[in-house]
Amino acid sequence: MRDGVRGLVAAGRQALSEGGAALEAGARKLALRAGHLAEALCLAETAAVDEVAAEQFRRFVALRIG
Image (cartoon, rainbow, N blue to C red; front, side):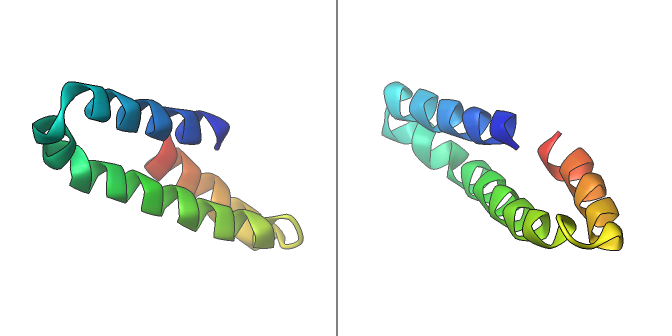
């Protein structure tokens, strides 16, 4: 999760440093990454107390966050 957040921040900073065109071109990808991280955080809360949710969380993170 931390690596995912760091990657999102790094990608956003890079797009900002490259200028408006790069930010606009990568906006959808950045938004999807942010959404996946937010979804993983919601799953993580439930995963702490439920084994089925914990497995779903592990699968989601493996597929969406990397």
